[in-house]
Amino acid sequence: DTAVSQTPKYLVTQMGNDKSIKCEQNLGHDTMYWYKQDSKKFLKIMFSYNNKELIINETVPNRFSPKSPDKAHLNLHINSLELGDSAVYFCASSQGLRTQETQYFGPGTRLLVL
Amino acid sequence: GENVEQHPSTLSVQEGDSAVIKCTYSDSASNYFPWYKQELGKRPQLIIDIRSNVGEKKDQRIAVTLNKTAKHFSLHITETQPEDSAVYFCAASIRSGGGADGLTFGKGTHLIIQP
Image (cartoon, rainbow over the protein chains, first blue to last red):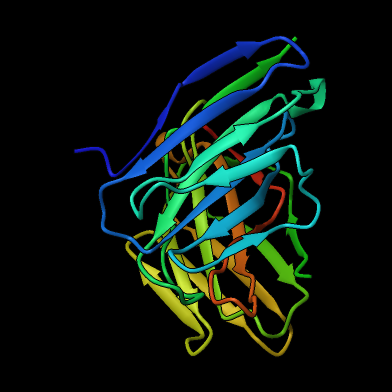
């Protein structure tokens, strides 16, 4: 009955590798997001995506790319991983396209780059 | 873009007392202000939110106030309990031309309830 799920929960990898994190929501929501939470607990939006448009935070390196096979999924691909990519990555979703919709977060993926 | 400032970064109160966390935002176009609670190792969970056409909202021991003129909103927790201990984040909606919007978060307040 999980609303927003992510896999894997933990990811440990070497610098320079390419990895993916998967996100699925079963709420029937139209919009999905990726957030990064760094070691100081600061939460920052990376992407927002609906079935029509991807909005990218301009501070996100182009090594990060979201991919959505369908409305219920928004996966995050990361190329050439760097030490600074170590963080917790949260997927979230909301009902529609408007700004006043509640966002529901997934459990997070803890990424450690060695 | 939007900037959200949150204070204090750490707040310690005695069990049963009230706690207040304050946030300011920069973008006058923001119209949605949620508060999230994050326990250690867990996901952020919405505890209350307020929209720009409302000045105050209450849900049992939790209340939020919004002053759009001053671009200021606050979280109030009364009769605090040990289970209220967590990190609390305020956020403001980001408006984008494409219609898919995200949230700008404050840096969080670590609330500690002393028994």
